[in-house]
Length: 464
Image 1 (cartoon, rainbow, N blue to C red):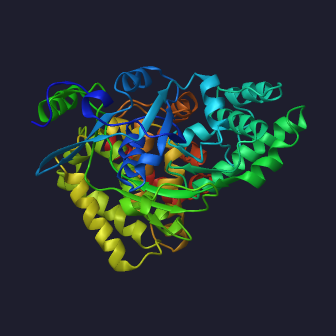
Image 2 (cartoon, rainbow, N blue to C red):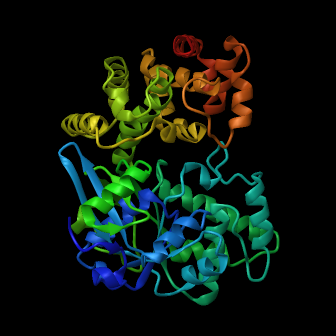
């Protein structure tokens, strides 16, 4: 046991809070296992503190504030646990605190912004732009026309309101670093923010804001990779036993971690490369590899393995049948990746070890959430590429069929922003349900009779 018993605070640990130089939206386990952890390990960590905002709930922010932003990072491997205290979160705020958000983003001392808000939070339409029909986006658009602009219902609205405050305050240049699983995520965020700012400007809002964003905000594309399951009461007790301190909000993660970034930082950044980050000219080969091999396999297991009774990734890959499904998927996906074969082989070997890690209880129900947002970037590109190459796409069809079964009530519960629409489509007779559901991902899937037949067969198989 390290340290003396008691609460986890800066006074107890003798550590000072770093000055706030970065802002984060989406305070949760992944940010604290990834971006905050890399920052804490950087050699210039003492100059880079985060003001971190939750999505909505105040609970985590309140817990962290009572601990002066400190928390325990618990790395779990088959050989044992390793605990460390992360101190890069200088302040934690509830996401609903609009005044704190706008004043923090406007502060010229803040030089970059990181995001972990989930794929669905960007409110994209099927063409990849901003969904102006979304209720929260429409409400934010009305608020952005005010003087000063106010918005806080949607993530795009909150970001634009913060940038509007920064522009008015003369806060200077800023880098935005999205870390959600979307291809070319920096450009995704740039597009939706400029579209929202332009729409507000065209209807009575700040007419100069779109140009200010274009001139002063850079958008960095990233690939992020670290499995971080939800923290359980047992994890909290394990941290207390290991460290001798009471931590209400530790983070559990695996030893493996990867971060690849491409883009400019006009106001500077932490020396993340010294903590293991990779800076490249084009992040897409790494991003596509991770989305296809890790996330694609996760989605396959979330729907297919839960349908046959498994609850975690480690439990699923211990089943030879499920492991064979994963390996078949990797075979299809690898054929369409551009990194060298030896690098892909090494990554697949690492994934096999990571998935089987018995100390990481990564629940399939957590992975299965928001399938309508995840499958178009994790699974559909490989399926379409396989069909274009004249192959059956049988492994990808298994994921699609398993998702239809999931929407029909098989396996873990449905949690999706389009749940009502999708479950209604899936409830039709199977011959109608499969093409109708697949069409919501990409019409080309529904038009492919061979693919529909394969997916339908998998739906039937998993629904028995």
